[in-house]
Length: 226
Image (cartoon, rainbow, N blue to C red):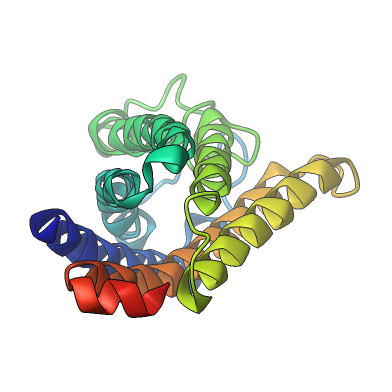
């Protein structure tokens, strides 16, 4: 239990750090601040438009490790919920890593080589493109993972705080997705909303989970947390 708790502690810390970096870099330099008209292919490369992908990409496998540690932490009668949560975390990670990796290995080299024909549907500057749609899907899957992970925590104040954070994030994410029609199906607005929700949640819950796993590594500490 001690090694799993240590892994959980450090993965929680790293999750919070990567989420903060992703969020801050995104705020100060996202591709959506630039007005790129159709066919949504930038004539020159702005490095910050791709810099934010690095912490976001690394966040995906880190979150999977964190969810695996949550599954290990869960009581036997609640492991079914943590297993489902881990499964949705894997879906999120698969979608996001594929989406971002394509930007580095297909879109960016094509733009640098001036081979831009047919890129419109895949570039991150296209508000109706596959990049934004896949990114939005990925972070929705993260919220579903949070929902099932919430059922794991039923102990003291720390666990109750985590449970309500996870449930609240799911409600906000689904509510914003349901309000797409009110936003005239502007998927970019939804994408910004859900990333904001998830990044704030990952920062806060990462800090709380690090405390939880630190206590779990100490039998006396774990007993006092419940």
